[in-house]
Length: 116
Image (cartoon, rainbow, N blue to C red; front, side, top):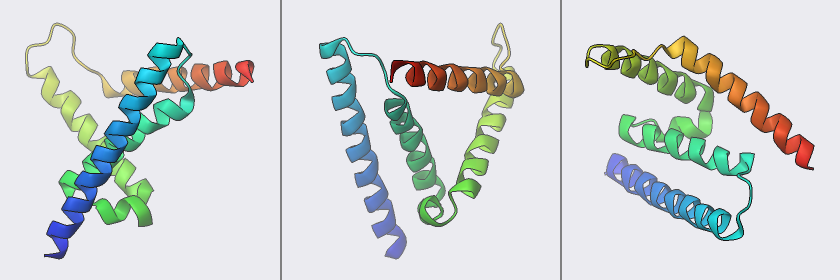
């Protein structure tokens, strides 16, 4: 019963977060505003909450988020491996994607600092 209650709570959080992201996206489009890092962080929250929900790690999101993040990243590494076997023209290299992500993150932080 406890597990079912946790799953329902996670689903509610996912729905609330998804609605919040959609509202933010609409406002950005309507106002022609630049995307903020706070908006990007919402996307990350959705990924973490969704992953925690389907893996039974919802409690870890609160008490041990670093372990949850590590597990999510490991799952994405496995996802990259599977994509290589699906016959894609170009395989997905996790390390390359992580380097690209770090570069995007740095640029986005620098851009936002420059706008303040």
